Length: 174
Image 1: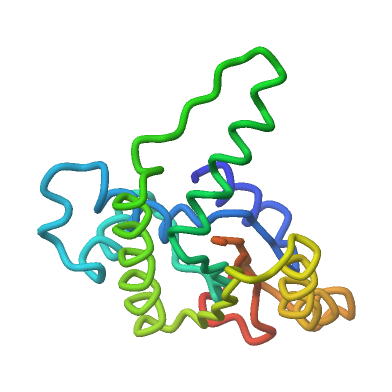
Image 2: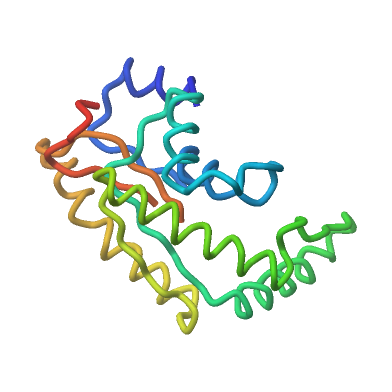
């Protein structure tokens, strides 16, 4: 959001990695949660969110994909594991099989629109991966960008939308 933009402009980091990207996630979740937004195409939602929030598209998105059935099992397991804290955790409204299917479809549409706009999209299917294998696959995708930034030749903006990393040749001048 604006604070992220301020920090990027003030400190000009060579690489920024985020867990989620506000433009991509906003375009996906608006489809599900905002009445009428589903009438807009993924490209229109993405364009609107980037303009309203003054948040440019990332250079790269690493999308961690999972089958909705497996995602729902993982959500239920996570909720059960957190129950011991005494705080009652409930699933989000979209955390149903139909909701997860709809969001997955929306992610694919939005990422296709982002790719058409110049964002590099890397998809890692995590359905059959253990957490350790998932982390390793993610690390392998991020390592070249970390190395470029560490060696001084990488610049830009990065996020994890499941992460986004920067290209050495930053097309947005960030």
